[in-house]
Image (cartoon, rainbow, N blue to C red; front, side, top):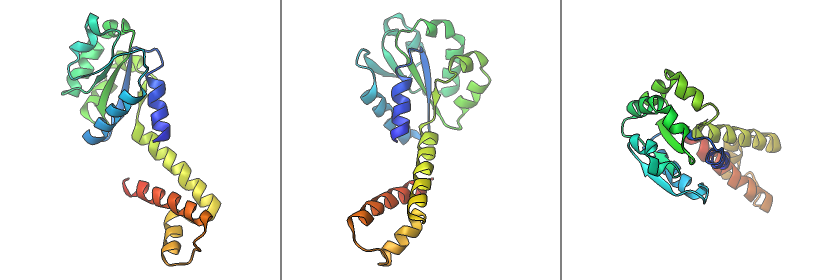
Length: 182
């Protein structure tokens, strides 16, 4: 999650009026919303919204808005229709869309909004998967075994209980857990 957190931190500080975060499921969305509150720039008030109209309100132009829409298709259509109003924002509005969901499909057909979101769309799950693969490769290169092979040998008592092996154990367990979820 280290790289995903960094990507979110950067997204909130680009100076662009709108961004998009993809989420895997509703629990992941809630975690991402909480993370946004934690890493948001201090100069902005932060509010969660569920209606697109709030993103265009004059009173909210300087507020960082976390937009978790009830209807993603309607939200994308509203954002596309009101791009000029979005351009006036001094604090970003972050649109949350379900990965592989209907809102993301609608976004693909909205060229104006898609262009506005160029390089402003992040997928934390994809970032985390890439980060995990890099860590797995590093582990395999350094110990000449996959994390699962190393853990099998540990569990069979074939690895001595040393400080170095305890570090490898923790890394292998984390990598084993991260691949079970995918």
